[in-house]
Length: 198
Ligand code: NI
Image 1 (tube, rainbow, N blue to C red):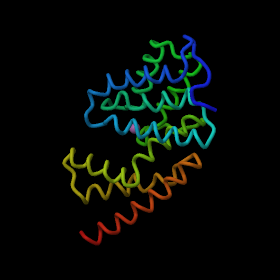
Image 2: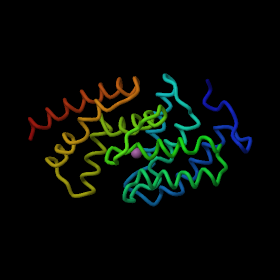
Image 3: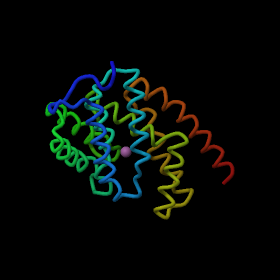
């Protein structure tokens, strides 16, 4: 099924809506240099990959991917991003019935939040976002974050143990599990090398 099948309330197709949502995302996320657009693009790509292989409503998953970190920098960013997404989507007259499902996916995407994904589309976003926290890209992001926050190598290794090495067993989709497995192995190898060099 092409992702653009169907039209929304304003007669716009999904591609046209997504273009508009990307525009809004760029506008708001410029304010948070720490959480960059590259991450959002990779999460979006991960969602496309999962949707190519597995079921899920692209009208819900793709806007959720673009807007999932839109309120990054605020406390409880998942809930705040959900609220902001709801407002923006209503403004552009996105199909009404999809909005609560998009908000739900955004609210439950955060590892540090207290919600976990329950429906199909929320699970896809969760996997897509957390895949970007592991593997080579996860290592790079962890050290960038540490550097920006004055943390050293040892403290970053602790972060791997507390969070990143747990993510492999927290994937929901088959595609997510498969990719996470490979990325997990890579992180283990990296950590072994790092420990031995340290
Ligand atoms: Ni994210």
